[in-house]
Image (cartoon, rainbow, N blue to C red; front, top):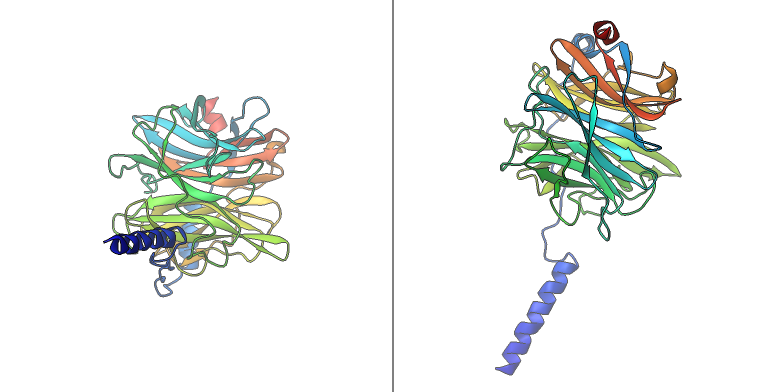
Length: 366
């Protein structure tokens, strides 16, 4: 009897050890991507550009308080008002704030929704981006619920400083997306990070901003599709590319495809935002250092997997004193027949959030 108990105890210890060591758990594997689909023709790309272009710069719409910097806006509609979730950097690390607007031009800061906390994997970096938004171009731009909750994904890490490696991706939810209240973090660990078994060659250092869409048609066999940029470090140079992951429940995520979907070979391709114009998926993203400075551009796809990159004029680029260094990190919507292009501007006013549009809004305001 004692021998049997000892054997059972030994088996239990071995099982626990195997779990802790990652043994006995099904290996994470990259999901094979669909076969290469057709590219988007030049005329369709041109028509998309004509639809989304924003040649008129309105100016700065959100500034940090004191010496803090602001970054990475994402905009949504809730109960008839507009809200912006954005990053606040105070020198220590990223937190996430929320602001409210009636007209998309004047913004009132409400407070923080993701804050620093001690002794966790995300202690000093919590940069949130809204998820599951109505991605229809010119649509409601409201946040869709899953399991009765509103969601966001966030870039996070434990170390202080400006985007200090390594960074990973976490998830959080709330039932009150209009309040400056702390969102509930999904787990005590990230959903995607660089040390997982299905890590791909282009994401060996850090994972950055993510955008999750709710694809109810399940084009890829999954309702939730995430796009994010990740960094590969090679010969002392860092290159960022955009890849995909998919999920059936917003909790368990698997990488989709072995290759990035956006790769410009050098510099940064980052901060994707997905919208749908007719039968074309459009990804807004920013580029930096594979062309001068930092700017916003786009790519198009029919299947979410195979993307055709726009090679024409940038959607925004440095041109004003307040964005003469970087004009990048887009969030673009169409409302009341006007295209609003929010972006991070870096220039003589520090790091701020600015707005460009498809018509001159300064005249409308005056």
